[in-house]
Amino acid sequence: KNEVEQSPQNLTAQEGEFITINCSYSVGISALHWLQQHPGGGIVSLFMLSSGKKKHGRLIATINIQEKHSSLHITASHPRDSAVYICAAGTTGTASKLTFGTGTRLQVTL
Amino acid sequence: GAGVSQSPSNKVTEKGKDVELRCDPISGHTALYWYRQSLGQGLEFLIYFQGNSAPDKSGLPSDRFSAERTGGSVSTLTIQRTQQEDSAVYLCAGRLPGPDTQYFGPGTRLTVL
Image (cartoon, rainbow over all chains, first blue to last red):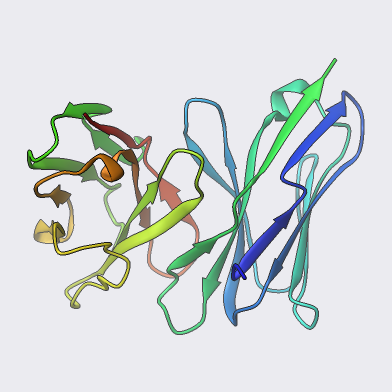
C-alpha cells in the first residue's frame, strides 16, 4: 500500500465545474503539499498546509489531520487548469523529505 | 528573481556511460533535494542536503548514484555506468530556511539508450 494515495487518477471536467481531488496518507506528516505539474514537466508548489484550510484564487486546499486526508478544490475550472496535481507528504522526522502520490491528471474542456 | 535552474535540460547517453546533472538553486536555499520521475511513475526522493550536515542519501537507488553540493550552492548528481532503467526526469528543488515550500527546477530529461 502506498503511503500517499490520490484519487481519482484521471479527471475530465467541463469549464466552470467545481473539481475535487483527494489525498489520503498513512504516515505522520509535518506538512502536506499540493503541487501542479504542467505538460512539459515544470512543477509548481500550490499549497503547503499542516492544518485547516488555505485558499489562493480559485484553489482551496483542506486537511483533516485526524482522518489523514486532504482535498484540493478548484472552483470555476478553466482549461488552463489542465495539469497533473500531485499530493506529497512531508513526513515527520525526515527534514521535509517528500513522499509523493501518483498524481491526478486533470483535463478541463471548453 | 530567477528560479532554480538545471542543466542540461535533455541528456541522451549510451548505456554504461557516466553522466553529471547540475542544479543551481536560488541564493539562500539552505536545503536542496533531488527527485526522480520515471516514465509513467510518480516522483521519488533521491537525496537531500541541508547546510553543512551530512546528506540524507536514503533514496539513492544504487551505489552508481552519488551527489554533492559544493559551497552550499550548486549541486551535481552523478550516475555512473548508466542503465536503461535510469531513464527519467531528474528534478532538483530548493527550500529556504523555515517554510517547507520547495521550489522546483525544470528538470533534466535523461535518456539512456
